[in-house]
Image 1 (cartoon, rainbow, N blue to C red):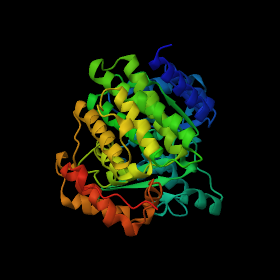
Image 2: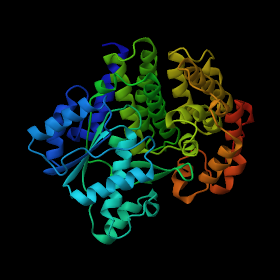
Image 3: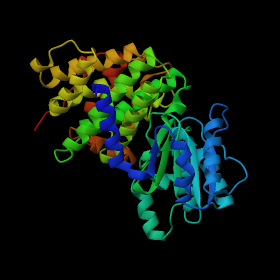
Length: 433
């Protein structure tokens, strides 16, 4: 068995450990969708965008549901979400749920449609109490309201069509407030889809920019969770994250050399799914937190790709073991020429950060915030303000170095300004106790 085959086999074992028979992935996954829906209810509301490229996938899901004896609660398909799950799309989907009263909901699409549907189910559930999503942004606030009211969320099958966010597997829902150009976040086990499906082959016709955006998003999930791993979770997170990153770097290279190939789509699908597993074990931190403030100038994956090398330098003195393991992967793929065994702390972080930026450059991605069209100093101000928002406190807590809202200006500010100018030396490391 080759190295690549061993990595894929390890990924499949990890996904089985994660989701068991509640997740159908790979070839034939859409044929199993109907059986998964039937386990949730008999009358389903289907949510999906009406794009021509998505229609064959939607039709496969509908046919599988029909074969399983699942009825449609609405004689049609509810339009899904625009990119980044705008809040008005969320409330529109919630109105369909309230009008047609399905037993379950089936969302077919990328992370935006799945995240919007998760949030819509929350808004619809609490329509008679308080449907305002503002009350549920943060951690475990949905679960608390369910316990207080005795209400239950409608179950959901998430059918993923884009390798990236892991939304079909996780407890996260990103919703964008376009009035403030700011993403908001629901984090709650209660909104994790109880069933999911993803046939990786459906991503073969996706534009390369979308494929790479998703790949960098998945890589960021693995990387950030691994950086923040506790002593107790280290071995488990290491298996998940390092396997995922290995697959994603390989998949990105294949996206340039053999785009749309089964090997490429499988590597990216498995890798981003492991990113989803990672963020159910731990949490993301700096790059994800900042990306929420750049929604008007960059895709999520692109913003994270820019920021993670800078946070690697910032975190390196505190997480040398993680940075060294990540560096080994990038060295193996030819992105780092330095002898990492000779480097420690910040110097190790600088070498690995440059290797990560070398991957971005090969993929045609930016490595500085200034390279994002429309980026201004106002985006840095917005990011620093958002980092102090109690609703996003979990991202600060997940940092591998202790940071509070009081530390944001002194330490996160230099990271952002370093990223704007592309100058890694501007980063100020926190003192280690």
